[in-house]
Image (cartoon, rainbow, N blue to C red):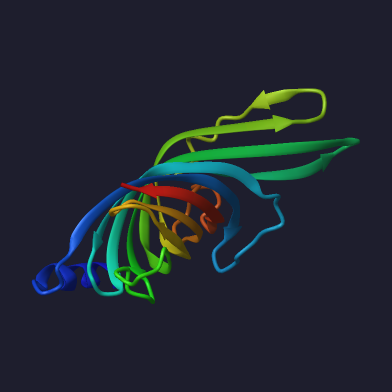
Length: 205
C-alpha cells in the first residue's frame, strides 16, 4: 500500500511537492514474543534508536517518508536454577529501513504552529551485531547467539506524533511508534518476533 501511494504521488505533477530531511533519536521498549502475541512473559528490554529521514511532502495531507535507523532491540528474562536466579539479556542491533505513508489531518500550510500526523508502513532490518549475557548471581558470562540470529527482520510500523513548525521549513517532531515484527529473528525459535514501542524526538531542516 505504501509503495502504491508513493507511485501515485510521484506520478501526479499537480501536487507541487517538496523534499524535506531530518534526524531523530529516542528510546525503544522492546520484547520478543511468539507470532500473534503482542507481549510475552519476559521483561522489557530498553534500547535506543537514532537515524535520519527523507520526506516527500505535498500540499495535500499525504507524504511519503523513508528512513535509515540504527536500533538496539532485545529481550530480558529470568529463570530459576537451584537457589539462584539466572538473568538472560539478549541484544540484537539492526540497520532498519522503513517506507512510511504519513497523513496530517490539517494541511501543513494552515496558519498554526503545530500539526498532528499519523504514519504506517513496512520496514526491513539488517542485523549488524548480537550481544548476550547470562548472570547467575555470582558470575556474568557472555553467551554467543550469533549463529542462531537471523540476518533479516521485517514487519510493520504504526504510529503518530506532533510536528511543531519553526522558521522556514524547519520543525521539531515528537513521535510514538509500535513496531510489529513479522519475521522469525532466531532459527531455534521460529515463532519468535521483535515487538515494541519507540519514542523519538526529531528535527526537520
